Amino acid sequence: MKDIRIGSLTLENFKCHDHFHMELGGADGVLSGDNAVGKTSVYDAFVWLLWGGDSAGVCEKVIEVKPLAPSGRVRDRRAVTSVEAVLLVDGAPLRLRRQYREVWSGEKFGGHTSEYFVDGVPCRKQEYTRRVEELAAEEIFRVLTNVNFFARDMDWQRRRELLCRAAGLPGDRALMALHPEFSGLLSAMGERDTEEYRRWLNAQVKDLTRAGNDLPARISECEKTLHQVEGLDFGEARERLAALKGKQEALSARLFDPAAGADRARLESARQRRDSLRRETRHYREALGELEQRQNALRGRTFRGDRCPACGQTLPPDQVRAAKARFQEELRREAEELAARGERLRRESLRAEEALGNLEEEVKEKEALLPGEPGEEVRRELQAVRREMEELQRVLDQEALHTYAGKRLEELRQQEREAAARLEEYQGRLGELDKFSAFRAGFLEESVNALFREVRFRLFREKVGGGLEDRCDVTVEGVPYVNVNNGGRIRAGMDIIRAMSELWEVRLPLFIDNAEGVTRLPETACQRIALRVAPGPLRAEREEEGVWQAGPFSRYM
View 1 (cartoon, rainbow, N blue to C red):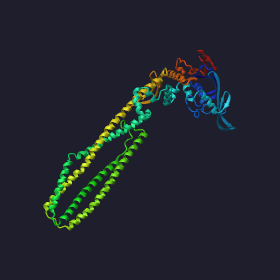
View 2: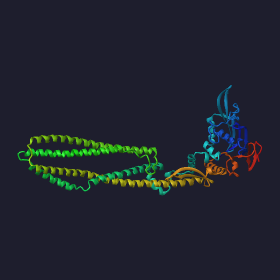
View 3: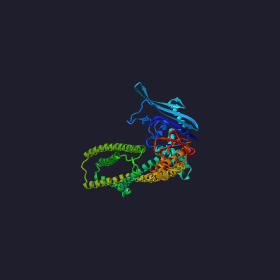
View 4: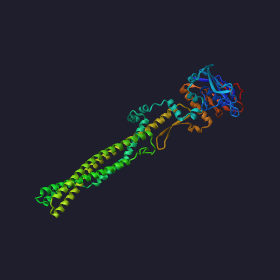
């Protein structure tokens, strides 16, 4: 354990002090006096000597260390500001001095310069800083010399990081491995850490929820298609169509006389092929119309996956980008499939229309060459047979649609079942992560708080809607630090400094501002310098074996 104490501290032209000397010899000390006599400035001087800035954390470029006149201007621009301390490092003296002055060339002001000395030897700033950092890093220095810094002034995220490091909490995977109830979660995580796995699960839940919202509409569409052709007997339609074809042949034979039988047979064959092509082209037009509707619907689909389907909050940008990429990829793939199908349908439609045009011309030519056709009654019957055959053919055209819709309906229902099962699994894993987070929170708070006697740290807080968020709130006997009185905050700060000194294995001089708020300061292994408000001018005293001894100033009782 490294022990660093102040042997003496001397200020020249620093803030409100023209000259101040405090001789402690490593013992505890007290600075007392009225308000605004410069007690805190002594601590500022010690901070400025080592690190620049002041005890409140204000940077060196902002603070004014030179004494000021009542007008607010520098009182003596030729004066040299200096602070010197003799530190006892494990009993060995180390003299540090820093001075600051204006540079003048005649009557021309040339800026400022700083000079640094170690044991009376001038040195560069880098060497001076290195020697100071060998004593303690700046953050450690601020934590261990100021009772308020760790609990009040330090950023809570940094405070939390230091506490977690001090508690030696194992990593999430190591912690899961120590407790069998989390073995399944550890296996499911693979190589991911808990936060990566949580983000991945949330993305999967979002995708599955969106798919689950889309599937019922698609299933309903297939069921509607099946309902439209429900009750059609395709087997009976085929049998009836076969019978009508025989009747059609018989009627055609009665309609035409033998002399023109061969020509009329060829005309009738051409008419039948023409009628078949008419049905085929009509089928293609309907199919292309349906395809165009699907393409229009596809073009109208917009991305709505930027919010969590469960709580409605906006998702992180990386998840939004990933979901949008998947959405665009699905649109592109479906658009390509529809475009390819449309191209095939247009080719077939064009072929059918060209063939129909040729047959129309052929029928007209044959009809022009043949004489008038007798048997009006037979003709009407033949036309009725043809109309019925066309109706039956339209029924049979629905058979392929019925087969496709039935198969697609089963596929969508299977997808719905699988999506529901995966969604349940992923939501269960999220529940396990929440359970582990709560376990880790309790484990971490217990480990951290075991280091302290009077203060307790609340490292987690329950979020609205469930789950935990990181915190680092300081409490004293259950009361938030900000609501604790001055004496309680001082005792809490000293408890923190005791624990952190043991962890960092270094003891530094502790300045206790407003120490009059505590009737009895806790015992500490480090050197204490108490700053107390009391009537009269600034006084310095030191304590040796429990007795307060007068310093360079007259003793205040």
